[in-house]
Length: 239
Ligand SMILES: *Cc1c(COP(=O)(O)O)cnc(C)c1O
Image 1: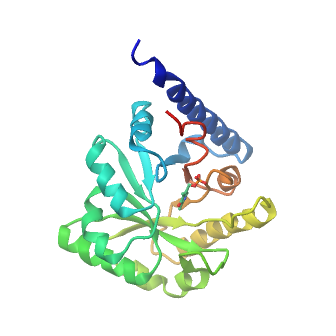
Image 2: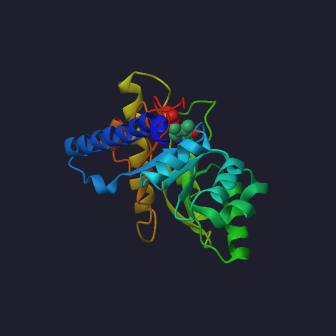
């Protein structure tokens, strides 16, 4: 059979996906949450297109890319049913081309960018869903709003009417030490709760946090969106 040589990788991908779903369910069970409240975003930034097609063939249609250019190229090549998430930095000159294909932009990291999106969305008659990226850990190398800035400038954020701010996103420090990771995720949840209290109605539902190395902890701390790349495609690199 001609399809035989591809079967092992396909099986491996299905196994990885099933294993991740089990870990999501287990983390939900531990923390008294409903697994349906956690969405798995398959991060495909390092994955060749053929492999991404196999994932889509398995029925997984929620994909994340970190570079707007690659997201746009792939959106043109994959089925229109794919739900696209941008998880990396968005340059202001890419806003106009990217808005029409986005399900959710996770990586709004400045008021300047939010303002630009609001303006372009108004012109295009769109109301994009976005998350605000927060630098909870305060590492110099990380993108995102400083924790305090969002609280002090929240009324400004609420003033942008052409965007739907759905929640917050963060990245934990790259470390094996859980005691350094958990407070970052908890800090994002607590910030979300404070900002909801400061809003006319609680509009922030989503917490995008957790990657291959730390998503179990993130779910225990309230993640509604986990972004997984390397674990999902582990062992699927070779043809
Ligand atoms: C690459 C990336 C991920 C996925 O990371 P893995 O460790 O491969 O799961 C998640 N979030 C962001 C913002 C990324 O850039």
